[in-house]
Length: 261
Image (cartoon, rainbow, N blue to C red; front, side):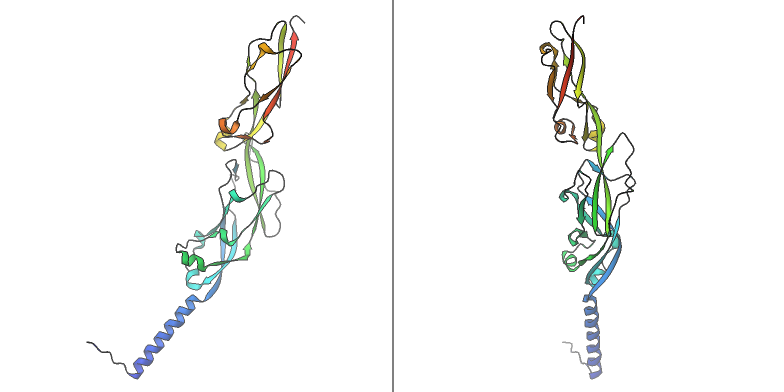
């Protein structure tokens, strides 16, 4: 059996080393604050008919975090960020923007260990900018993207443009047969003559027109030249929807004349 013998000087030195170690450990566990600069703000689960402008640069924010010094030292600014779940944002179709306040729940770091993550707290009032204002801008994809430079943002706010992908497509009415007796079809008037559809870019690119059900001319008459024709289920058939959700049908007016007049 090995027995260790310590002199008084050795015991004193050992005590000093242990005390120094405890001081170092306590120093590492001391609650500290640190300012993180250039923290990106990312948008997740954006509706499929909305896109950010092509030249949009991911905005950054500044935030102060607090926690044990040894845990804060593990945070990498380049791997941290605020993540906004857009599926939870009530986006408005009108001119009034929807607003979101950045919170600690939206802040994610590179810390893998859950215990380390729970040791870090965000000083929410330190976030600059802290409020996001989302503006929906109509974008006819046959035209250049609209400008967003004049969007207003107040103090500690950031204006975020969301382009609504859309396109005007003509409405067609397929006809069959000829008018009965002496009637002659001069022309067809459709109201509205086109609808504005929105949806994923690929789907909006693909759709060229919208067709009503077939109209059989054999059963028309001068007394009833107006027909309310339903539009198809655009979402089911084409993966798009009308921008004006109330548009579900069109009015078809048949301009009829009598043969020989």
